[in-house]
Each structure stands twice: as C-alpha cells, then as structure tokens.
Image 1 (cartoon, helix red, strand yellow):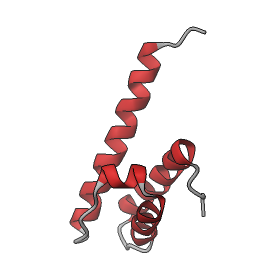
Image 2: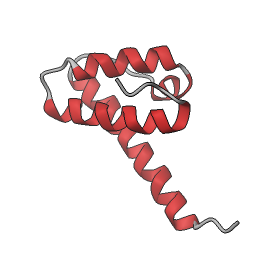
Image 3: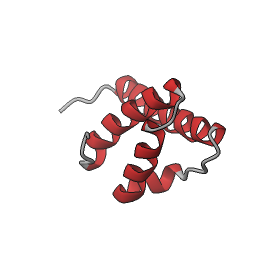
Image 4: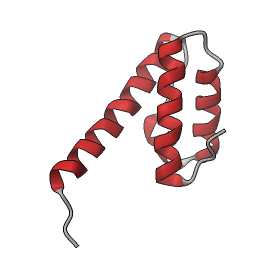
Length: 80
C-alpha cells in the first residue's frame, strides 16, 4: 500500500496546530490544558472539551468542536 507522505505530514501538522490553538484559547479563558494528556486520557479530554463548549468565546467553541472530531477519529471519543 502506498502512503502519500505529504498528506500525512499535513494531517499531523494540522492536528498539532489544532491542539496548540485549543491550549492557548483555553489559557485565555483561565484554564491550563495538557495537550499530551488530552490524547491519552479520554475523561480528561472530555472534561476540557465540555468546559470549552460552555465558554462564551466562539473561537474556543469552534476549536473544541474540531478537536473533539479529531480525537474521536484517533481514540474513539464520543461526539456529544
């Protein structure tokens, strides 16, 4: 099977950018987020994402939705 390395790099880069955006948007709301833990701890990730979705910051809400979709693909996190 042939894998296109350029597409893989773009996907990894965009995932990383999404994680970093989320971390800093949450920091702007006064919450510290551990991006590595979000990838390995479903309960922690879900708690952080729920907090973000309750925020009044629309950029953070949008980022949380996109991050939830990305995590669902990576680790089977529910999409609620």
